[in-house]
Length: 294
Image (cartoon, rainbow, N blue to C red; front, side, top):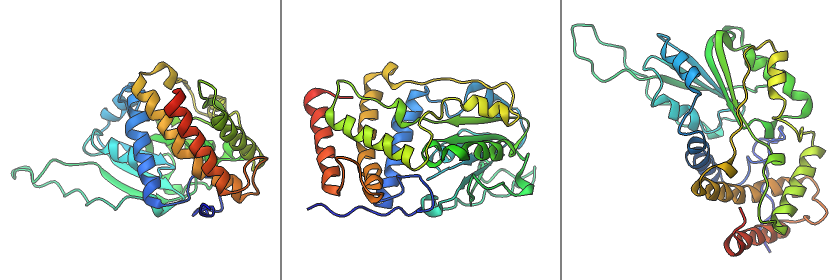
């Protein structure tokens, strides 16, 4: 018998991947960032016009909402202007990295610098569905979000977008990167993959997730008062083989935590126990290795 399902450590949200070993989840987030998101976007953490905007400012402020482990924000700290202020927000502090040392106060002009000035970085507990404190509103030049769709119910998108928009200064930017189960498919057809995908989609709809989002996100931006909204679609099917293989690996890592949520919530037609989850994991692994499923 396999082990019983792992409970979520954020039980008051529909986000279904905060379960199992914390170290494994941190490693999964890092893997996806460095092996899928960064290479898929050509190594760009921000669109060129947004990065140029930051570089034009003497002390830019960047918010990363639903920061998770802070892997995106930490990567940005390596290339952001040296006087940048970087703030990560998340309702779950368990994945926050250790707070980095405070950058030193610049020495007097006559003294040689002790070391190059670096961006400051801090992490703050906050739920995106709650309005941000007054002192934080209209105080950021860039607000970044990645992969929030799994954590939002249909009725919550409006509040999330409105709260994010409230953080941005005039002339600033919101950059939102996301995907959803509807857009993740496999070829050649795989029975194990389709069983996982169908159960995951049905479970998402049952708990209130919008299966279409993030499609239509630009309309929600405009409704929140944002202007000059643009959309760019990245597809791993159009990427090189390495990114496609990495994407397949990433999907396999999703099977156990996502189906554990299904089992915990009563199961699906063919998925009642963690033994069923293991069966699907093994079937997917076999299809990838023997039939080249991606």
